[in-house]
Image 1 (cartoon, one colour):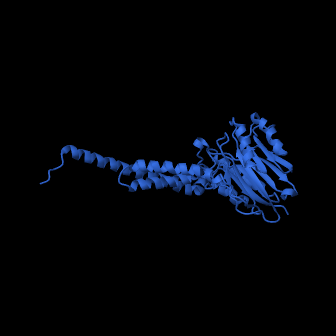
Image 2 (image 1 turned 45 degrees about the horizontal axis):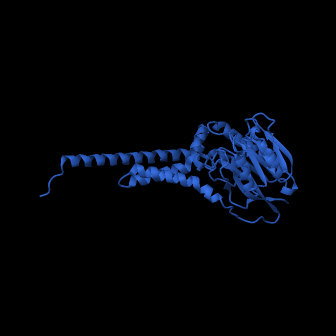
Image 3 (image 1 turned 60 degrees about the vertical axis):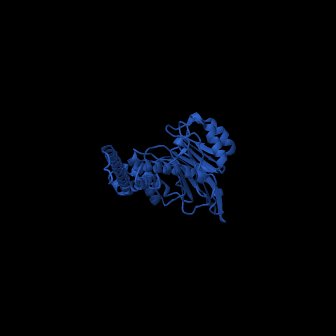
Length: 332
């Protein structure tokens, strides 16, 4: 006849059951939490009508879906539920951060430039006012070798970089003489006019109008306000779209939009401007070299097509990574 379990063994068994129960509850709570975040993120378009601040939840949709999957798997396994969820979440975040860098190491050609167009590689980089490594910025621009580059948060303290860049880019404009303006635009092609805006009603921007060589292209480098200034971010997005409407000819708008492709702010700009987005890879932050969200973008008018997939650059001393893409600009 089998002996009854000892009291000590029973206590251990009960303790193990309670521990597993707590793990199940913790995983279920995390799944519910992430599902609520996902719902708020999806519904941000409607919530933003009440308060645009809600739009911030949309930026982290990938991470939220990853959290649901990670702790959902943890909920299903018999033991180490919370630990499993955490490990899957960390591995997923690593993949999100590493993928754009691996993807960007090779320039993937989508198509050749059709007749009547000119291939133009453009690069946008928020190099950060706090960047103390202009040598890395110069090296990255030389590596990417764009035809036109817009530098955002380019401070007067980094003036030495101007001399080096002007050797490769004979046409340039900057706004160091204006208060609160930190832009520079460098080009291998001549442009006849440039515009700089620094008021809060529109995003800070620098623009150039090219000649027949680039089909009278208008190119803008922009820096839009970020959370928690979500209301004014939306105001700037709409003002930028309105400012683009009367401009004739092909258009390229690139820079730091402080909004992801999932956000109401960026989707509204795309719809109002009629431009097409040619980017979306995570480009921020550079912390631990694992960018998580794509807030740096390149937009172009519908008559411009992409000749390559968009890439992010390598680390160059900023909290952002640069973004570059090759486009076919109509010249006739």
